[in-house]
Length: 277
Image (cartoon, helix red, strand yellow):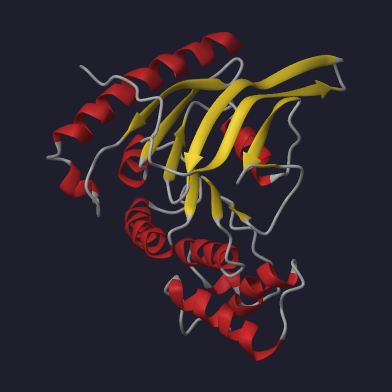
């Protein structure tokens, strides 16, 4: 098995997100101890790149994403976006959560509109058209007046994605966005997401626990290890797009990378369990 990690993107690429020496520690009030969630994480993500992030539970993947989003402060190190240090949330970065985070008393249209209201951008007919365009972009035309309870899990996740896209962010931060839908819906949405991102040119950081999903979606796969959380290895997927799980079954690169990642994560998961015993 020769799947040597690739630690750098092509030289011609344009850096958009730079994570430099990032360490995040939390004080545990109950015990007075300090927990190191992530330590000395270094990562560069380029303009228009789709980066997927894998790792065992509790390895700090979401912590790093939250620092990029401006929701968590770095203890040491820094995150730069377009050369500017991240000090808080910004309209150029949108987060899509696993649990949809929809407002149940609002229709699809009003949930998507909320993405603009938070930025005081909802003004008149032009902005209404932006909301409508975002809804159509994710394939929900005709459901504008529906409520979240009337939608399937996959459709609710599309609403969350439309809400993120309507504000026209440069960066999408996606934390297990397909984790709560069934396997068939997940495969369909994965293909649609790949097509959507290719059409909009967004830069994406996508957390997943699925090795197959990480390979099929990512330009690069970043693998985290635990205790404390840090980057174990990074791989370029080097596969032509569009990609499908069925089509990838005969791709030697897909099979090689999948087997390598399974071995790496199995080792990390075993170590994580032993550390808790």
